[in-house]
Length: 242
Image 1 (tube, one colour):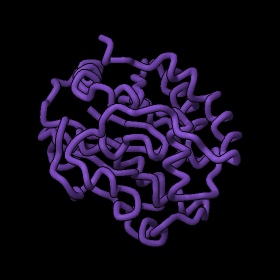
Image 2 (image 1 turned 90 degrees about the vertical axis):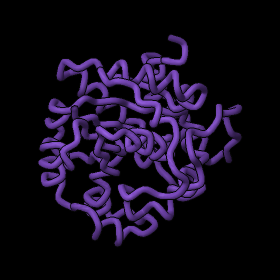
Image 3 (image 1 turned 60 degrees about the horizontal axis):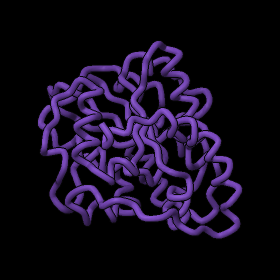
Image 4 (image 1 turned 120 degrees about the vertical axis):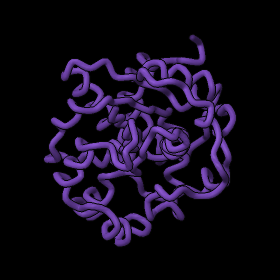
């Protein structure tokens, strides 16, 4: 099975990659389109030149690998994708060939976390619009994508991951609930900038508290992002309640 996990930044996506990386039957790939995204947009990110050099800047070559055989002789191919990396002009027909899953998070929490790394963020950089568009595209291909909220995963990781595995037709593996402290071989070269919290962890963080208070300058971005988040939250799979 080829699993395309779509999320925006600061959205539990690395912890989920680590969880699937703990499975002996799963190969994981960390943000395949990051190099192409920075190459095409010219956006300045920490370690940007190294990201471009270490990755594949040609999205068509990336897609060929995403559609291809699972590396390492594994049974399943877990692909950690950032929705904002799917720029206009990049072919999306390959989504027909993978099982698409959408990992969502409340915009206020995303902005609070992402703005600590990139202060002058924009709506497009947090990926909510692109996530909804990709979700609608997957549905147009006849799929019924799983949507899961990181809030629900953190509230009860085992129940959420058991439900997710069931929805995907996978047997749950308890190894998904914990990992060794530190980085993984699969980490992108950008890990020293972005993965500090997950490197210090050995499992999923606990339940989230109240929504964070944000500077007034971010109010408009959160309000716009809610337009895309709310319909996906309405159809999210609250496995903790099943």
